Length: 165
Length: 384
Ligand SMILES: [Zn+2]
Ligand SMILES: [Zn+2]
Image (tube, each protein chain N blue to C red):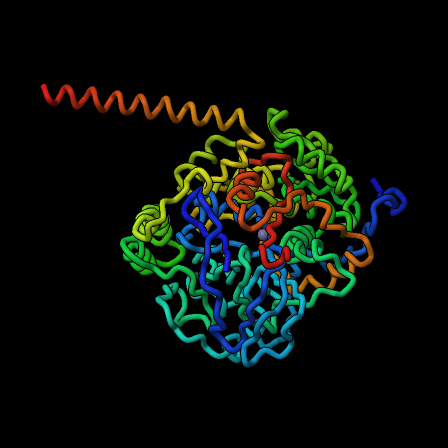
C-alpha cells in the first residue's frame, strides 16, 4: 500500500520531520571520534556537601551537583545507608529502600505529632475532590472502612473476653 | 514559601518550606508561575519509586521567572521567563556532549542509571521540584530556555516534559513514511506521541487505553484511531488482525509501571513491588509489533527487575529503543512546531488548580475523576 501526502493533507505538519537516517541502528549522537577521551570532560565546580548525601557504589565520587531535599534520618535513614552498600543491579539495594520508604511514612506522622500538628489524612488524600466528583465511591469506601473497623474491634474484644476467662 | 509536601503513598499536602538557596555557582532560583502534575508523578504518589522520602516536593514540569542567579551564570538574567527541562544536566559530561541530556553523569549521586530529575525521588538525585513557589535550578546555563515573547505560557509549561517526551517516543520509533504506529496509553504523553507520529510521516496511528474519556480526547486531538482494551479479549490479537495479521511497524509504550490490564502484572508489579511496576503495556508492545519492528519505550518503570517477554524480543528480532527525553536537544524544533501551529499542547490542559489544593489535584488525576487529562498548579505568588 503506497501512501501519498494527499491522503494526509488534513493533518497539519504531516511528514515534516521524516528522516530516512532515523534508524534505530543510528543512535542520536554527535560522533566526535574521541570517545576514548570520555573521562576527560572538565568537571563543573563541586557543590559543597552540607547534608548527608548517599552515593551509588557504581561511581567513584559524588556528582558535581546534587539535591539536598530530605537527608536520611532515623530508622529509615539507617536502612537507606545499608541499601547503598549494594549496587543498583541488586534487590539488596531496592527492596531495603522501599522498606525504608514505608517506615519513613510512620516517622513522618510521628514528626508531625511532635511538632503539634495533627495530620489531616482526609485532606491529604484529596477526598474533598471525591466528595465533589465521586460521591458514591467515597461513601462506599467509607462504609467499607466502618464495617471493617467494627468487625476488627468486635473480633478483638471477643478475644479479650476469652483471654480474661 | 508554599510547596507540595509528600507524606506517604496517596498522601500529600501544601505546606510551608524554607525558601531555596543557591548552593552552587551555576544555580538559579526560579519563581514558579505554573507547574504540572505528570503521570510519572503518580508513580511516586503511589509509592512505587524507591527512595521517595517524606517531606520531598515533587514537580519536574514547571516554568517561571528567574529570581536569583549564582556567580557563574552567564546566559540568564533576573526577570527572564524560562522553560525548565525536567532533566538536570551539566552540559559538559560525555553524555551531555552527545545530546543525551537525560543521561547526565554529573547530576545524580544516588544512581548511575538515571540522571537528575527535579522532584523525582532520591533515586533521581534528591532535588526538590517545582510544585512550589520557588525552586532551585542547578546548571542554570544549560537547561533553562527563555520563553519566546509570542508563546502562550500554557504551551511553554508542556514543553518541559510532555511534548518532548511524546515527540522523542515517535522519533525513537524510527517511523518511516506510511508506517502503522500503535501507542499504548492515552495519557498526556501518549496523546502527544500520537500527534507527533504524524510529523514523522506515519500512515496510520492507533491508540490503546481503557478510559473512554481519554480515547475520545485522543481521537479528536490527534486525528487517530483509538480503542478500549477492556472491550477486547486480547489486545495483541486485535492489533494483529487490524494490521493484516502482520503487526504494527512501531509500538510505543507510553504507560510505564502503573499499567492496568493484567492481573499477574498488577499483583507482582503494583501490589507486591517484586518487579519495577506492572509491565503490561511493554508486554503488549513487544507482542504486537511486527517481526523486525521497533518498540519505543518512554513509560517510566522503577529500577528493579521486570517480567518482560524477552524471548519474543530475540525471536522476533525487535529493536528496542528507550530513554528519558533529552528535552534541551528537542526544544528548538518543538518551539518551531508550536509557532507554525503544527503542535498545540495547551489544549490538553483540563484542570487549573491553586497550589494550596494540591492534594485534591493529585487525587483527581490519580483516580481519573472529572475527565482529567492534564492538571496544572498555580502557586499563590503567580495569581496576584
Ligand atoms: Zn513529566
Ligand atoms: Zn552532563
